[in-house]
Amino acid sequence: MQITVNPRSAEVAVVRLAGRLDLMSAGAIRKQLAETVTAGHRRVVVDLADVSFIDSTGLGSLVSGLKATKQVGGDLRIARPAQQARAILQLTTLDRVLPAYNSIEEALAGY
Amino acid sequence: MLAEEIAFVPATVEQLATLHATLERFWRTVEQVLADPPGLEWRMLFETGVIEVGNNIVRYAYADAPVPGTLELRLRVYADRVEAHFTDRGSAYVAPAEPVSLPLVSEFDIPEGGYGLALVRASVDQFTYDRIPDGRNYWQLLKRFGG
Image 1: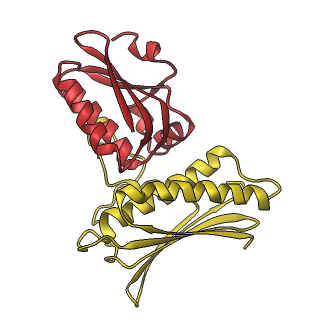
Image 2 (image 1 turned 120 degrees about the horizontal axis):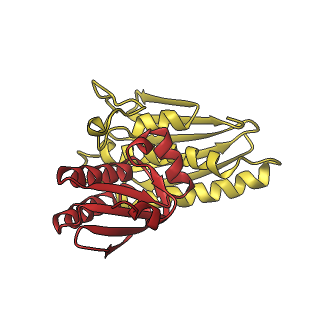
């Protein structure tokens, strides 16, 4: 799993993930999202375009990031999830709190 | 049974990638033995179930073991379905008193974990667990074509 953090402003950051978001990487993702929020970026977009697989631990790390942003009055949005990610977001109904945006710019709009 | 793919995998987080590789080989076999193999989204759901069970074994079956144990995975294709059979010799699975079920509820009630097996049930048609008297755990997943 590779993580790239791209601050767009003092409050907004895009976090790009590549690889599998699973039991192996979920802890590191959770930690990085928490650090991104702690650094002041309370509005986060997670770009999932290059994430080939997400399991329940991966979903949990995204939920953890969402909660971290909400605690400081922010938000976390996901962009460009691939087919498998969309399927399990729907199965778990987590798409209700983590709706998928088709592009990073759409996710950033209104931030 | 038309074909079977078998893997013996150390039950560690680092070896979970082997399950993905085993599944990739399995799908190539499925494409060879079936005239009309299932599509990508169908396969993804089965894979999700397989990986979640693998996660469960890695995290819990050998949690108290001094060295990691092994999990055995058999993937089988039939004319009307695929099956995954996991065997390990770790601790018996104990279902939580209040298992998480899908759909998950409102935003701040969403658990950050514990819903892996609920996700398995939503991804396949049959999902069973048995503790065999000789000390083995046996998980079976079944997914029918056309579903």
